[in-house]
Image 1 (tube, rainbow, N blue to C red):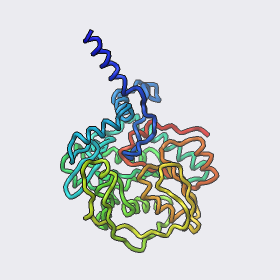
Image 2: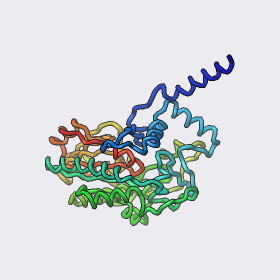
Image 3: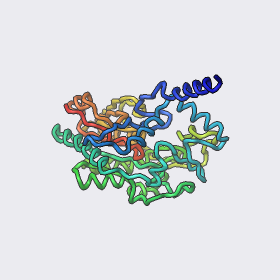
Image 4: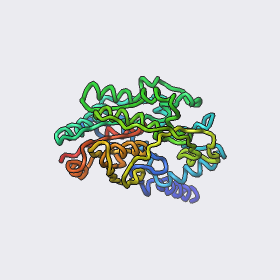
Length: 354
């Protein structure tokens, strides 16, 4: 009888994680898009050989009680422990979850099927934009560990960054499509001598780092980028990685040089995670932008807002029919921005037919 009771209790405990699956598209606390539920068969009606691995990632992102378990782990790890954060010397913190460190080490590559699926999705967007006289840009925001990887000592690279998944995708798109695809890895490395482009204690780049990406986007659109007047010294004591860690003191020593760009004449809370519409009463370019984005577009926001007549922000990467109807009347440019560690969700996106 005791054995039966034990087995029954164990069975109930095993069912608890499945009792309520989180169906959110993104995690606010981790600033990332959650894994997309995979299909057993590919678009070509072939068996998906990676279904088990992909389903495991999907379930691991969404099972009931995941957040509580992470908090318990962090507390049990001691004052310097964290499941989410890699702590290195000189106040450098790096994000660990969401395949971030695997991406840093360049351990994974896209399959031919995945590359073709991404190309088809982006080409569908591009062709629709051409049909309706819109311009389209696909932009990959580099992870901090790809720009400041020299500060990581606890993880070794399997392959050099020249063999990264992002490079693989960019090269594939340039060879097999006419999609304007930008990955500012080289430009960011070239601009590192200007100042710190990412926050040490945060997953994100700052407005100086975003300016490097913004200039490439403007170049692709044949638009002269705006310039900043000066760089202001600021400190960033607490970032999102500080909050994910346990027992860390604020960084009150690191100085950042950020552009003085207080030129925007309008009303907009562009850093919110919901759909946002912003207008500039004195734009440099009389054009409107519709951008699919994640948290890396928060630092791009000031540059967009000081350049364009209006900007619409959508925190997602899936194009919807309602978007297309809105873009027809309200946008001249479509930008799809996403941080590179989240590219793994892109093969599962499907373009709607309007």
